[in-house]
Length: 91
Image 1 (cartoon, rainbow, N blue to C red):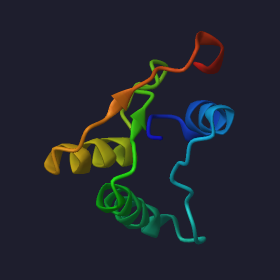
Image 2: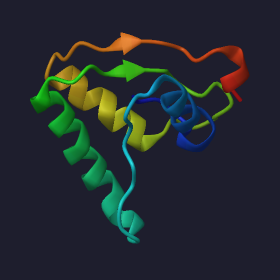
Image 3: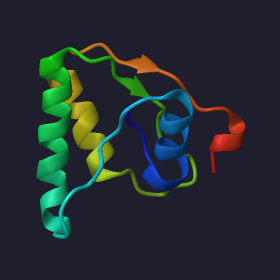
Image 4: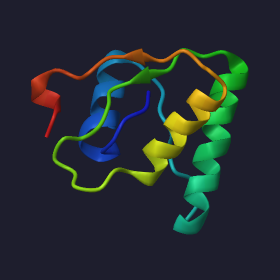
């Protein structure tokens, strides 16, 4: 599952529906983008279903990680299912 706002939107919704999502590993934040890119590339290579819950309407700046995920999916012409979370999950 991809989307903006991991803490308040992606993780709670993914856990509710039993979906997997990128979990940042390591203590060095400067590595998280590269790790996230490798994760989405593995998802694509494995042929896993990708569900996109979309942008967080409360953000004034788009997430660089989310934009990278969408770019990788588009670059591979990979199918993505849109599934906005219920309003109670959107903050």
